[in-house]
Every structure is written in structure tokens, then in C-alpha cells.
Length: 424
Image (cartoon, rainbow, N blue to C red; front, side, top):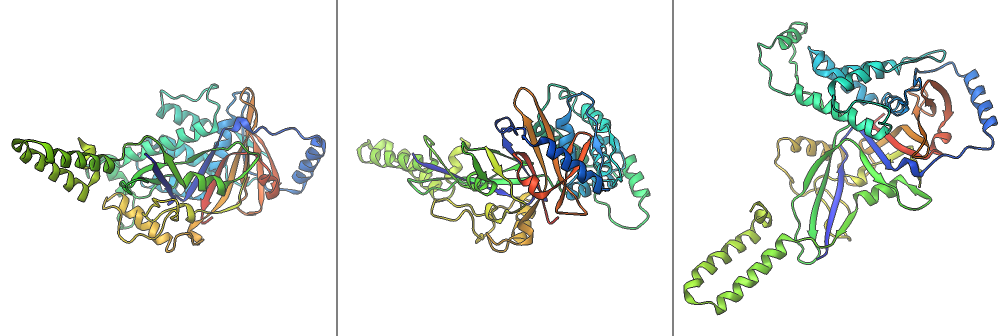
């Protein structure tokens, strides 16, 4: 049976992170003109008096951590979110990772007139304290895995902070007492800018059945690379959000139709004493077909883009169910009444009045890139990070080494992780 699966990311995040599998298939060869490159970099350092902190590695093999922290430091929306969370929390012991990450990212954004570095010990300690079973060690050498650990830790701390608090809770009283203005303090406000929703639905090419839209959250999108030399991010996103054909899927509507056909056949050949039972079964199947079919269920090298329009890969709630249809279109009616999802869907509708229209709300700007050098046996992670004060100027940061590079140099890289931010 031919079944298709429609998938579209609800990109309502302030930040979009793409992980491209796998970094070890795309090593960067050493250039014959390395001496000229070193000379050029040296000249850049002589004319550039603007630096940010590097991060020491000291042989501990934590370049994957340093690369992720430098990339996250480029995301202003994330830093704002962390600051607001800390301002609404009296007891920072509930947010060890949030506090350590915020202070680390803020320090990484301090302007310097000469090169300097520090050890990211606070975030390492916080992660080890919050994730006893997932300690950072020399064996954990993947930047993507470290990013997911950080994001997961922030979500866990959010979940703890959302637990109902008594007005007689000591920390809550301290928070209210320290607030000089008579304003309402929300202990649960603010949504993690890394978190978004994906939506998918299944439809049958035989009977035309369309299943309900299923939602799941994500903090990054992992995209496998095809076996070709050059591919654009737009091509990968179209493949990711396009229609996938599935074989050997048991369509619930086809099953009900087949059951109905069997019952109707038995009605013509069965004895009279069985007719009432068969008529009752027939009515149940017809009601299921008329109301809710699912009632039965309960019993390579990447060409990096500096700007990217995500509107064409998002949905306002409608998902295409046939190959000839566009991915999504404005919904005729709400697709969910969930109190959790409805505000998010409303935000999507506000952001995108017309599907595919490249509005400011759908434009995400490349802020940082993590590159893996080497192979699966021996490698190194470096970060290319956009400068805030000079958007077309970038830093190349390899642990404690910081040098200025051009945007053209960044776009030449074989990316492993891409960090985009909306409206920045």
C-alpha cells in the first residue's frame, strides 16, 4: 500500500540549528599555500584591535565543548532568554546550567583589545552536577552531542522551575521582596528559543485517507548528507520537509473499508440469528468511517547560505497530502484546540500571513558555523562566529586562537553544524 508522510518543521524558534551528518566524511585538506595563509592571518591580527575571549583546551580534548560555546555566544536571543530566566529565579541552585551558560556566554562577548582566553570550568562543573550519568570526558568528542546535552539540561531546569510554587515558598517570597515595582512576576514566562515543533501527517494514496497531524518538539534539525559533491542547504531542507513514500503501512481507513466489505458479504450469506450482530458491527464501522478513522487505534560538501528564508518550509497548520500540492497553505480552520499548541500556532499565523512569502519573520541569519577538521580517528572542532559590531566580519576561533576572517572564507567551509538566528 502506498502511503506518504508529510513533514514540515514549525519553525517558530528564534534560533535554527542544523546538524549535518556526518562531519567525518568531509575533512578539510591542508592547502599548499599554508604559509601564505599564516602570513595573511598575521597581517589581519596586526590591523585588528577587536577580539573576544578564546577558550583553553590544555590537552583535555574538549575542543568540541569550546566550539559549541563559541557558537552559542553568537546567539543574542539565547543570551536574552537565559538572562530573563535568571531574573525570574530567586534560587539559582535550580538553574546551575542556565547560570553557568549565561555567565560564560556573556564573558565570551566581552570586547578585548588583545587576545586572551579562559577555562570554561563553570559550565563543565554545572553539566557534571546536573547530569551525573553523562559526565563530560575525553571519550565524548562530538559537538552535536554536547549541544544536545546543553539543550536538554536547559529544558530540565525549565521543567523544574514550572512546578507549582506556594506563596509561602521562601525563594518566591525573596523574589517578590526584591522587586521594587508593583508589577506581576511570571515564574513560567519565556520560551526556550532553541525549541520548535515539527508536524507530520500520513495519507493513503489508495483511499485518500489523511491522518491527524502529529507534533513533536525539536531543538535542532539533523540532516543526512546525500552522496554528491555539492548540495545547498535549501535543497536539504526541501528534502527534509517534503513528502516521503512509505511501503507496507496498514492504512486504518482501508482496513475499515475491507472490514465493512466482509460484513456486508456475510450479511448476504449468514443465518438470520447472526444478522442483528452483523448489522451492529456494520453500524460501528460506518460511524468510525464517518467520524474518526483513528478510533480503531485505541483498541559531501554543503554550500552554506548567509541568509535563509524558512517560510517555505514551515506550516500554519495545513500539511500537503498529495505530491501535486504545495507543502503548506493558509489553514481554513484551526487544526488544534490544545492549550499548549494553540499559542504557538497563533504565533506562526502572525509571522506568516502568506505561505512562502519571505517576510522579516521568516528570515534567519547565519551567526556561527562549527567545522570538523580531520577524520573519525583524529580531528578537531573550530568555530566561525559572526561579529556583532561588524556583521560582515567573522572570527575563526580554534580554542584559544582567535583571528579575523572574511565572510567569503566562512562560506567556503565544510560545515558540521550551522547556527541561524531570526531577526538579528
